[in-house]
Length: 450
Image 1 (cartoon, rainbow, N blue to C red):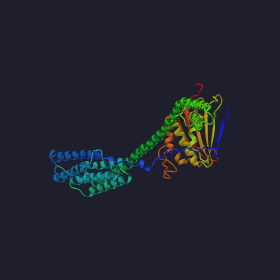
Image 2 (cartoon, rainbow, N blue to C red; image 1 turned 90 degrees about the vertical axis):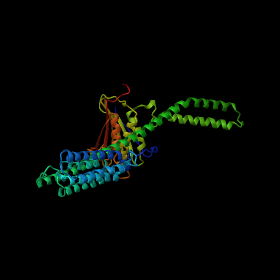
Image 3 (cartoon, rainbow, N blue to C red; image 1 turned 60 degrees about the vertical axis):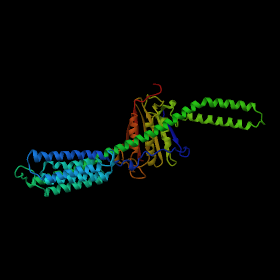
């Protein structure tokens, strides 16, 4: 039951097959804009609400207010809505700058209405927070900062300058300390909405971009799998007619005379048919490049070696160890479904280890009757203690921003491997040499005998 150890010598390693990077560019994380129709509908709702409220206050409650000025401010908002809607399709998207200007106008229009109707004492002053909340979910950080400053400036102006609150008789007088409290409360709420709203929306955007990258990596692996299956099917289907051609060519070789002018062509035909048969045979017996039904279930160590072989580098030695862990465990390795998720996930982990290793990467496969595990260790600097808790989340990397690295490789590997039922843990080697250690464990292994 001794462990089997194999070493892939750098000098003997075949050339690595180039694989696409699992990182995505910054441009794929940027916002695609917001639909103009969404903002237009929100403004129409605001215009209707403002007109209804003004009508109820003036004609329903009989409170005095500057009707023409208030109506003009509301009409201006409606006119602008019509202007931006005409000539543009409902599905049109506006960029970050246009959306920021759109919401800035709403803040200023609300500020004008509040100035005419009591300032911060007006209970509807809370509506100033609505454009800020909308902007926090759709705008960039710079645009959100600009909107926040504009809102706080508007609140400050309204605290100092405003027309009397519409009221029946003299309007109520609130203590200055209370008015200052309203100003502080609205200003702090504006800051908190911007901070938390933008942060949560940004995390959601990053997660969506990371999942898109994971799906792209999986789709690439599935295309490779489909190509391998097609090659295996072609080899199987072409085998019979090619054998017939080879037999006929040999019969013709025996029947033609040595000085026959067709002799050279027949020998060429026989040689080329033998060459085609050798190519098809190689396609049929190479499990690393073929995912036909014969290789759907593969011993786990062989599967791990196949997933890691494309990431070898001349200066880094990759070693493989495999064997049972403990007594009373089957000596034959468990079998595993050869899936695109597993191949891409293990490949990403090996690629990461090779990138940071100084001289060696060790891939150990162990199993018991309860679990099977693959551990990838390297002799590099290891994971930073501050990053260990964050590993597996998107856009976390010590190389973020360098050569296009965005910290998606580990996230993609973890996401894909968890889809196969595995549990992925990250840590550092306990030996004095240091280095990172990534363990992938599957419960309930399947052995060939069962």
